[in-house]
Image 1 (cartoon, rainbow, N blue to C red):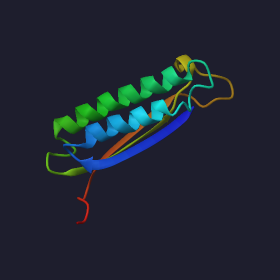
Image 2: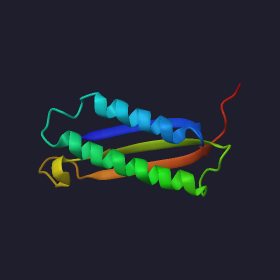
Image 3: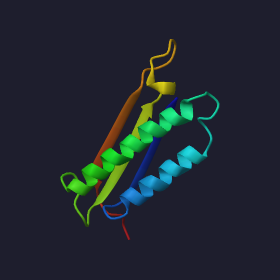
Image 4: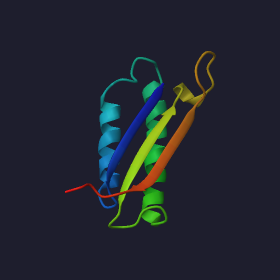
Length: 103
């Protein structure tokens, strides 16, 4: 099942915003119709959150005081196995500096 989400905000708030977005996706129930699908999507989103946290906190892409955009998309199969007629598992994460919002 494919998924996509994105958040924008300051360095200091981006991880909290991402966590809220992930909770909303998981609470939607959109992945409950296929056994094992919700768990597979959860695995990807948890991994993505951990990676984004490591990258943001490293200060090597965005520094405190800067603003950032985070996009996560991918496809997860139950138990992360290739299924005939389904796309293969994949995970894409994009993190970039953005200008602060205009006031």
